[in-house]
Length: 127
Image (tube, rainbow, N blue to C red; front, side, top):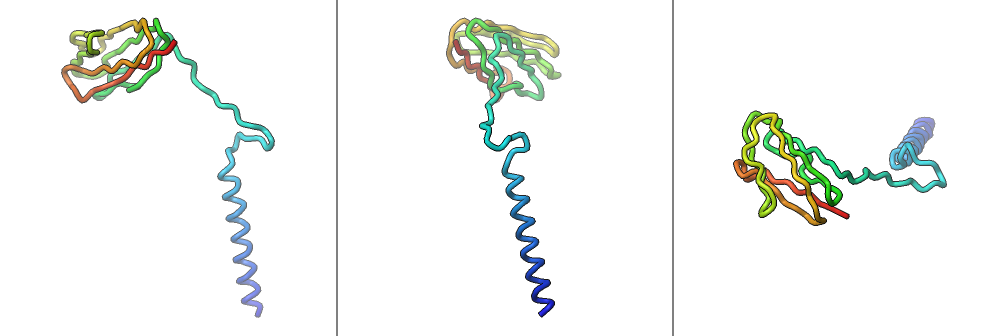
């Protein structure tokens, strides 16, 4: 009988402990009861820097204000050439070279590396 009560007490204690842990884990540490969390967003810039590293664009997709400028810097040890259909052609960018382009109008602009066609990126230009 004592073993049954001890076992039952252990099971109930474990259940209560697990319930308490799961409630606190699902609630963000920064939330305050009764308060609605406020979303924080990063402001859209009129100047962007994109790094070419390990045969990829970092960041791969970026948002920019209309009239803003993007500067790509080649941090790779290999040559790259940025192209966007009927928009720009960086010519060859050796290691540490940079290329800038100003996007005058809103729209979505895809670009790639003509030397490494699997390297692709996107600039989203907003008002």
